[in-house]
Structure formats: structure tokens, C-alpha cells
Image 1: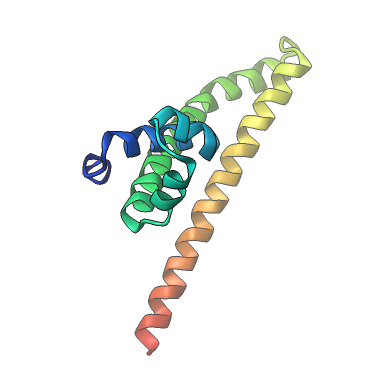
Image 2: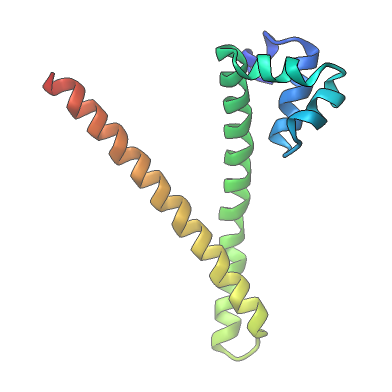
Length: 125
């Protein structure tokens, strides 16, 4: 857990794990043994929202690393496809992997451009 989540109560940490895992607010309230209105109150709290974002970012980074790890397998699939030894579904899966990696890289570049634009805008003021 991050420093942010360590400052939260155990129930809040359980709620964050549920939200990151795709559970609904109602399901998270049940997991954390609290009222659904409590979950909404937590979501209005800046510290809770930052901890939730941090947890989501951690999961996203981990899953992104896994996707990049599939790139070597995808290249091997392409090679087998070129030699006629791969099934079409295997080659399509490899194409999907590289499509997702391309989108991740594009999003990363867009975020970097946005940060640069914000920096330049703040310097021009």
C-alpha cells in the first residue's frame, strides 16, 4: 500500500480495493461493512480520491508491463505466421497486442504534450 492508503482506515482501504477491482459502490459498501452513503462521502474526500487514483495507477502500470511482456510472444507469432506455421487466430491476437501497445504509447505521448503545453502556458504568464 502507498503512503496515502496507509493514512486511511481499514474500511476505506477495503473500499478502494473493491473499486479498483471493478466493484460497484454498493458492493464496496458491503465489503467494507458500511453504508453506501459513507462510500459516497469518502469519494468526496480529496485524500481518499488521491489514494484511489494512486491505487488505480499502480494496477494500470502493472497491467501495462504485462502487455509489453506479451510483445515478444506477439513477434514470435508474426514470425510463425510468415512461415505459415501459425494459426490465423494467433496472428490476430498478436495484432491486437501491438494495437493496444500503440494506443498506450499514443496516450503517453498525448499526456506528455499536454504537460508541456501547460508548462509553456504557465511560463508565458
